[in-house]
Length: 141
Image 1 (tube, helix red, strand yellow):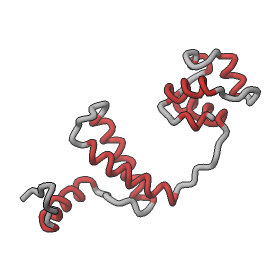
Image 2 (image 1 turned 90 degrees about the vertical axis):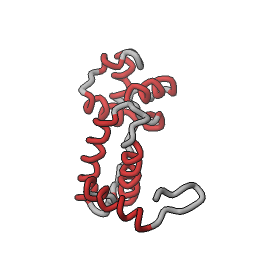
Image 3 (image 1 turned 90 degrees about the horizontal axis):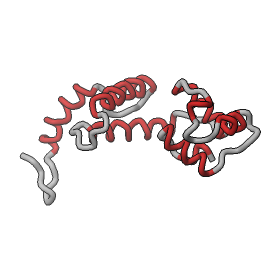
């Protein structure tokens, strides 16, 4: 029996669906570092399968697992504050980029000045870098 909007799903029905789901996914609640690692691997696999398809049926599973990871990381993972130049350097290294590869964001000389802390990152450059790396603009400000 499927619940309609006016009635709640029966616990027995939920359990019949939940146990096979939990067996297939492996970890459904992140409680420790091992769970965290396993769920991250599952998320990577889901991202590969889903791609850019915002109508993919597994998107809700990805959202659910991402929420579990976020909740765990909020209390168990410390991310030290970093200067915008350090964030930029890190992202460039992760993506295998050189200064000239960011020409669409700023001239190479400006990127060099930012990386050497001779110059801050302007709002317009921060917006371009955020779009380039698909991160929140706040990491560059």
